[in-house]
Amino acid sequence: MKYTIKPSADGFLTIDMEFMPNRIGTWEILLPTWRPGRYQSQHFAKNIPSLHAFSGARACAIQKIASSLWQLSVTDLAPVRISYRYWAQQADAGGSVVATDLLYINFINCLIFPKAWENKACTVHIDYPANWQTATSLSGKAGTYSVKKYRELVDSPFLAAPTVFSHAWKEGKTKFFLEGIGPATHFSKKLIQAYQQIAAYQVQWMGDFPVKYYHFLLWICPKPYYHGVEHTQSTMMVMGPPERDCYEDLIGLGSHELFHVWNVATIRPKALLPYVYTKEVYFDTAWVVEGITTYLGDWFLGASGVISWEEYVACLLGNLKLHFERDGQSEQSLLDSSVDIWLDGYGAALPGKRVSIYYKGALVALGIDLLLRQKFSHAKSMRDVMRLMQARYGYLKRGYTRADFYALVEEVYEDSLADFWQKWVESAQPLEDDITELLRCVGLHFYQDQEGQIHLDSLSGSEARQHAFLR
Image 1: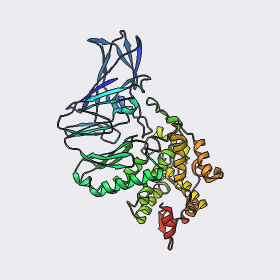
Image 2: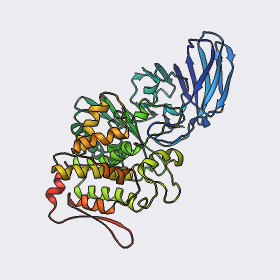
Image 3: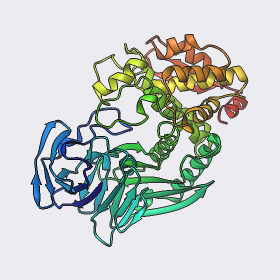
């Protein structure tokens, strides 16, 4: 497949897709309905007014037959070109934007493909001003990039602007980049140092890094915003407005998205291996993907020395408050909410219905970590779980099920955790007493006042336990 993309002054991308059919007859042409990292149908096809198809100079019949599906009639074994326009005004980390001073493309939003061609090689040429600078994990030059699979292309966002900040460093066998658009004050030495510490610690903690190049991509946008999306070789982060000090948000988000290179880009639930872009994909382990990453993303900040113990406790308290004060009385289990996120999206659901795969998921990850640390005096922790997940599923490119995850954690724990899974994951039972007891073993006092506000205090004389926890 060959794609040519040209931004227009009216906010559209003008796109040509060419391919060589290998048979005469009816073809199905598809556009993804969702993107990895956000388990919600977004129906990107709503941004395409129409498609026009040609075989040479002759028009081919093409008709829309479903929300993100077109039927193409091929009458000759000759190259087919499909032309269309895509409205690119979704200014978040998972969207695409055309502006006078910015071109930002998430290819999964806008690149159609013939059915079953997700593993075909692709070339994309992007037309942007010659004096602009770019940032992307794609390899190429002069705006032309080639990849072995469509899957790789749609996992690789692209940024271009008159000026793009860029800084690179080496950690182990991987070259890291911090690249972005916005005021230079946001790309500070302090942020670079923090990302270097976070990357170094995570690589050491997991033992290696799955890719040779990794890009922290950042857009400081004009409006108040906080959003990040993980990719195999990059993360896209959108923060704003420019006058806000985004440092604390950027280190937390950067740490979270970086760990996704292991936990979902490499270690993946069975239902997501491979990604099926054209339908909702239900799986009951979304809390493993997002909850463990939310918990460890903050934990890495403290363990790497980017933030202090007191600052880490404040991060942990924030996550605990988001569950207990907002969702603590919700009716659904994590399993139900992992499925219903496709139904309700990421905004508010019915009052008292859903729990967060991020924040209750992080609570479950904290519980697993503390159970292991308590039983084995910190000789075992979540690190043993994630390294074994990488060995069993990441390296071997095997997908895991919930039963697989349960069994692996119990193997590390050296005993059954059936009661833990039933209470923490499979039901909506209250967890205040359980978490109070577990946090005490690392020198933290968790309690709820008469107004229902959550508190987390360090116990006196608990410095040794605090030190052991952050390692």
